[in-house]
Length: 495
Length: 83
Image (cartoon, each protein chain N blue to C red):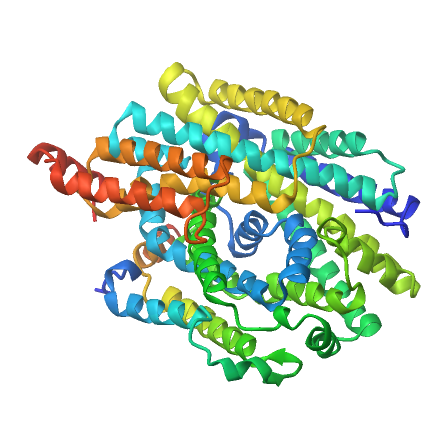
């Protein structure tokens, strides 16, 4: 994104955001010196997050800087068909209701730290735990990479190229590593709160500015009626299938994001968790809804952009609005600072979960179970830093448009859900079929994505999931489970 | 004794409502005549989707508040016990 309007003021706001994040990390460190001795304290904030902080940390896992910068271009290109972005965020909360109530209770009972730890507890199978951990690490790595690319582009865009892409990435990644290292989940959640406020404020200002200076939605609708009526029409049959598949894929997919699951374990109490979810159910209207409207207004404000040019839509609109007066100028600077902060806040959550899988599941369970929590933590943190270093090298060569990689990681992460969710309820679920389903689903989803194969316009991740689920269910019905195994499952689930 | 333990997944009625809402959230049922109708500059079908979305959020809030009760009571008792 090229924001000709900013420059030194952009650098100033980034420096301020960076300083606040570091301050939060230092403050948390000084207040909680003991967190480096315990996985619970470091990765879950001592299972004590209150409603507001928990809400904003869930908020940061679902809404990133990409929501603000990447969604309006999609609305610009697809028109009202992209309205699906509002309900698909609501679907995430519905998907949580399938498993979060029971998972919170079980997490509390067994002091679970990571999602894979539940699989280990439930299936006691090295193959299932390791495959799930690897899928999560791969999906999270991909996701983290995407955030780094976005940070670099954002910083160089906001500062008008004064700070080059690479320097932008390094600057924020180092800040993120420092506050994450110092304060763990607490730092991550507190900075999420600050970052969430900045983003919400900025997006509101962008909408107000767009309405004032470009005319509101009705003006844009008139334009579409005259020049591109297909952007107003009711979706056709393939459009409807795509719509439904997005609702299902993103609903289930985002709810089983490993870092989203981990937040369930960090809730202070069931009441806290419930209140946070209740608020989240209404957020799509003020986040996805607003960015959707901005994209629609953009159709009239900057007509006829090519696909590539439309990716810059938010930058173009913000530049025009910023040139109007000082209030909007600073609001737009604040917005893009907030966008970058939001990307950092998504990245820090992913990295924390990434490290926790290493600390708790791979190193702490299989490689060196005798190690102290302090040592497990150190290994997790160090492997996290090493992974970040590798990803930064890859980020020098950013991949294609954002949307495609977004779907790619979903497709892998979603394959964990059948074993994970069915395992909470079904005593007879067979361990071997869970493994076979997860593997088959992953292969189908990956091959379809890589070869760019499409079937009935339904996302390849859903086909993989369907196969995965069928193998789990049919396999478990056909294969027998011994009396002892079934009793054991019943005891583990304990409900 | 307090209220019974409640888990949303065990209540099929709730999921019937969710399925109906999901069906209404997908734009397959609008007659072609809706194409030319607008309210506040938005196509009528899009307004309908937004209304159903609001219903879904409201229903979710209701279910979360009233049909999810596993640990809450115990946690509140523990808290009182500590104090």
